Length: 396
Image 1 (cartoon, rainbow, N blue to C red):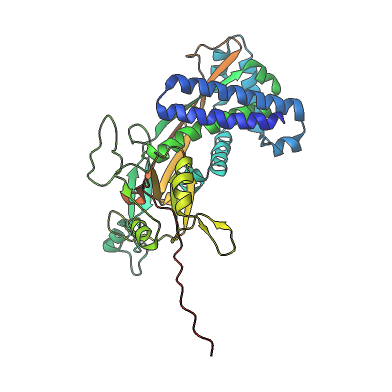
Image 2 (cartoon, helix red, strand yellow):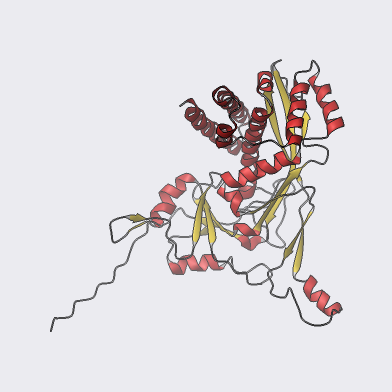
């Protein structure tokens, strides 16, 4: 029972953290994140007291079977955390043993995709120190018959496009109470991965939707057409929203069609699109416009003339939705070549707290400006069915 209460509270604290970041309220964000950390501590401690070393039960609760390398790392992290000079002990640990095992980060990124449909839809990859993204440029001319010569090589090379994606810093603080160190490697692993997963998701979701490209990824709502003015202070401008009043085949088809041609004028094929909106707009605008009462008296929802998956993200502005091809969005996250986790004492917490800084690098962007369309849904009409009736013929 307590576990359910804690899990519900965790969702509330994460939502509060997201809202504070969106509003730019640093104090509220700090308080919400501290509340989130405290809640995770309670959840892990409850699992420890309830399940102990019951591997099967812990596995059902999301605990992993640690690799030997991971277990060894956590054991040394626990030992360093209990030292009189934890910063020096941790520095020595990293110097001798190296940083956090990459498998931990890989598992966090997999969790992100499993738990969040938006990340599962985009081209989300675990990368190391990637700096360039090489893409097929949506042309059929990727293979040719005949002897290899310079003309054929030129044709093949022209089928690919290279995009600079120098990685940006992505940082999360992990605060570990000293009594957490007594629970053992498996529980410490769950604690760190939970905090890292949720902290990263808040940053990544914001970046995918509205990142301005200035020391951060480029989001779906940004105008990146060739020749657009990049502002050194504010990054790329937002796209101008296209007004949509209904999801009738003609109106919706015209908007979906804008995704079918790249900026280079090449046709791209796709069988479905994704519509992203916030929770309130889904309930007030999208749901009424895509829900009908069928012939057997049941409601059918999310009905579009072209296959469309609706994903809700509260990062999308009220009154807007983003229609996009998520598979055409690249987002890479990887470790820091100088070490993924470091001891950090720049924040002076209580004496029984150990603070660590988890450092990752990441970047991402849509393939080009035609990957997404921002929609103005403020005047979206509710759905309706037009029934055609014909006068019955007289019975002979």
